Image (cartoon, rainbow, N blue to C red; front, side, top):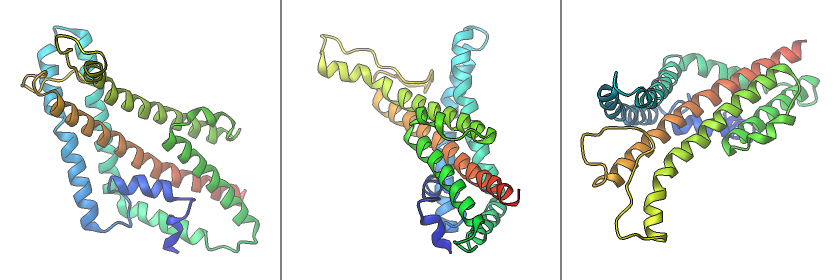
Amino acid sequence: MRALFNTRYYSITKLFASIVGIWPYQSQSKKRIIQSVSIFVMLTFIPPQIKRLYDVWGKDIDAVCMCIPPIVTILVSMAKVMTTIRFEAKVKELLQHIEIDWEINPAAKEYEILVNYTLKARTLCIIYSSIKYFATIAINVYMYYILITIFFFFLAMLCNGLMCFIMTPLISPMLDVILPHNDTRKRSLAYDLDYGIDLQTNWLWLWLHSSTTSTATILNIIGADLLYVTLTVHSCCLFAIVR
């Protein structure tokens, strides 16, 4: 029955959870390596943020407001990962219950309800992972589905923001190739950071670092939240069955 999570119903959740090393059925060594690398990458992003925040604290309120959100996002991402690691046994137990629930008679009414709810949850996951949040309006009229739709809409916007943050600094180098000037255009990063080295000289490496850490941060949020939503929707399904 372990193959259940390889089916179309749960494959998206498994994929994102496995990418960040929080899928309970992964080998312990693989999970620990992925989690360690992910947390280390996010931690390397904090020093340049703290240094920049220290430099502008009490001097430039706009710069302070630019520094705080990335730090909070990383802390939230790490909290989600650490929480999932801490309660890994509980999450695995809940997934085992899902496997047991799927062993009911396919001809039963309960099985139809289970498939119906799981397909709707899968649809939400596809919309979320594909960033097609505009299609969520017509998914379901029930209140908890509306709340989940809003949740996925927020995370989809978060992913769109990530892509904008990653791609925006590439505008200047691309313009230097498409519309070259006598002087090289000024390089910038998506975040207000202070690495302690010259930005213009080391821009490529600093951009790669900031993009990698941003991607790792958002992937951790996605992986953890998809796992939580999958468990929550299945719980809603059980309530619908006994209703």
